[in-house]
Image (cartoon, rainbow, N blue to C red; front, side, top):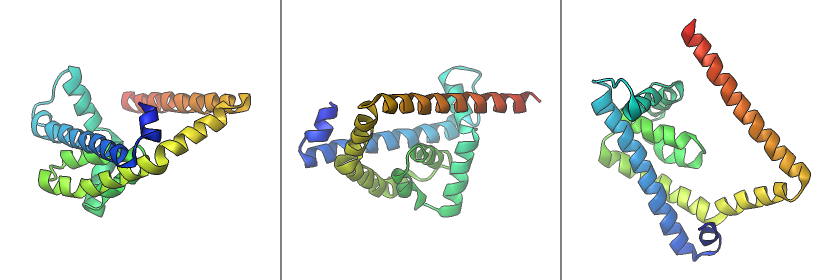
Length: 167
């Protein structure tokens, strides 16, 4: 499958990636919309609904909502030029009940840009970085070190947040 994205015909790769990112963005938006319409009024006790509700209450999601309020609809297509922030913005757009027609109109240019980036340089850049690091033992050690630092940082942040909640 990865070979298709690297060597396939450009138009087919672009349309495939556009379809994938469009579906993902719409799904993330509609999950946010669902959380607002169903779960905010009737907070679930446990299960997947509770996980979505808990995720909607995180600081990063609140920051995403604040960003949309501050910057307006333009932040929706611009979020597709980031890594990690776009899902928060799509979810936040659903949480604030951005109208579906306006949301789709705002996100489609972002989807087009994302598909263009990943159908041209995106996967090539990722492949080149991995190949460069994986070709030497120092590169592999650096990748493992970076992954370890990220995992430890996430664990430290989670424990710090739990301590704040418990205090």
